[in-house]
Length: 103
Image (cartoon, rainbow, N blue to C red; front, side):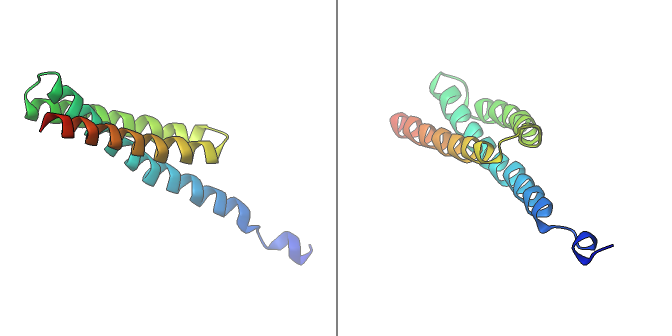
């Protein structure tokens, strides 16, 4: 057995770490943006603030679970990072605009 065969390559570990990071951090950013936008839009639509916040939080938890699992199922890790972080940022911007229009 050669030395090269005995030492595992760090590449699979790095790919796994990047995927776990995307699932946890990117999923958190996506869920945070989803909850912020959902609460703002529901409140703007006439729902009581605490009801809108609770409903958006429950749906955000389900969204986090969905994107967490999707991140491990997708083949393209870069696409997952872009969609999760970019989507979360876009939804946070929408929430900020909606909140500014309420005040």
